[in-house]
Length: 325
Ligand code: EPU
Image (cartoon, rainbow, N blue to C red):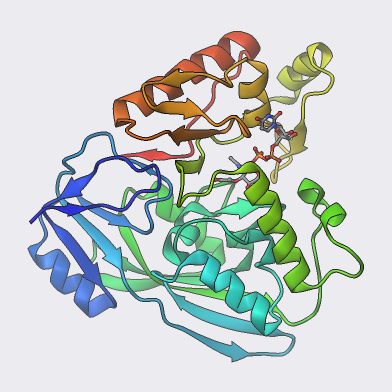
């Protein structure tokens, strides 16, 4: 029987082979009978299904369990890949564990967060991860990746680059018990009255996100559709001469300069652009929304029109953050 695959863009996507697993043993049993190709999905918040009938098999982890152990000044939380990411953040905030609060309200599951290295307001999931337990579908057994093996970079990891080889089972996070906040990004400090607390920071992040991003329950979207592009320092200098107000950020490696895709799309005049029922979100140009019955073709057409316009205006080629399957 055909099962509808969850995806926050709200596109039609169905599979005849839907498998749910809570642990390694169940996953191995599912894989043994599942036609290839194999696609693990979390909440489907970063996926664009290019056609309604999805080939092969789709897997979803239902492990939402967690356990915590305290060390000296820190706590380790081992969470199931199927735990809702924001439930994890709330758990940390409620218990006085520092580090995840800037990542409040990001859609998706814990497993996908470790693959995608989700980030917001100066924090990234990879910075909090002390190990990732995966099932290696090539070798047919589980293994653990430690941070130096995860190859975390901006919205990237070894898991993302390995073409669905690894299915995440558990993620172990290390959070601090000492108060420490990072409020310089996105004007969070201005939204906080008095001394910051974990709850105040979480509330400020939620309010900021809600003011700019569409509510996934109401309007289909996949969050930021494109990555913020990195250009050489030389190209940046030339751009900055023409556009002195262009937002820019240092990169983690110090090589090149990161630009704001939202600003480039906005300045290229793309707000208001549509293709069928797919549209550029009026409050944030980096978000493509489904106004109702958008097809994958509509979203893909709109995305390529945007890429062309931005390239013509600035000579910068945008790359999607959303993964097309
Ligand atoms: N901007 C415009 N016009 C727009 C939208 C943005 O001029 O329509 C400008 C803003 O004024 C600002 C700059 O672009 O100067 C950057 O915008 P914003 O602060 O909203 O952040 P972003 O770079 O667009 C990134 C992440 C978001 C994350 C925010 C906050 C990426 C691809 N996106 O967006 O992550 O929430 O920072 O930290 O890195 C996601 O990945 O799905 C996501 C929502």
